[in-house]
Length: 309
Image (tube, rainbow, N blue to C red; front, side, top):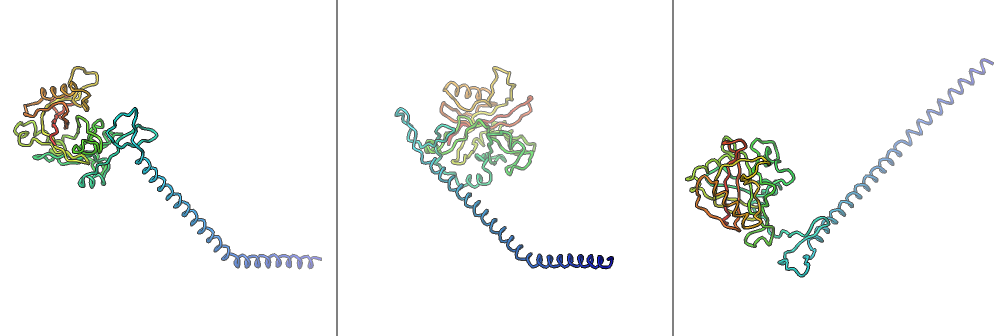
């Protein structure tokens, strides 16, 4: 009995081994076809996903382009038969009608703008090292305070256009019907570097003779070249908000009336270190260059030019 039992156990073990070996052989035979089929399925699904995403992406681009074109083709809005001077406008769901920009950038500024779209112009003054792009970031006025044109850290920073200054688009030749008119006063800020770079060389304009020999500030918007003749150079400061009856030159951007214009003009002439011999009248435009000075706490040296071109 014992011998038969052992023989059955051995036969049972041999049978299981044979089953396992046959199972492994079957798996080995089936593995390549299954693997290939699974790989093909993955490739197919990947191709379908890529096609779908490409299709959706192309549809998005097409939709965006169609929407842009549609917005540009919206007819001018005329209410109560009021003449709107035939200026084309676009309308979106969140804002009122605004002029369409039809002027083209100058070639030199288009190249600079392509490198950094925060650039809004270029300033240069003969007899100084001032020959720099002007940056404007409405959401963060101080963004370029310690960054260079490439947005990398720099103690020199950039020349910054005040966020309340409208540089303007289009051209004076078209009376800005091809864009938007600049504000009455454009204010630019820059660091007073000890080596004279950035706005450090504005100190030279404390000398009346230097101003007479270098009276023109050249400022180009993205669309036109402008020139301003210096009409005032004075020392000032940034006052506390609570201080009243003081001249805060840095708060004047648009003249809402002739009295407001004359008030600013009279004050800069009164504050000027000397008479430049340049006069201005209501309707003129200014550019104001502001840099730190050290005659008082929060002192500023200010150079103001009247547009002549």
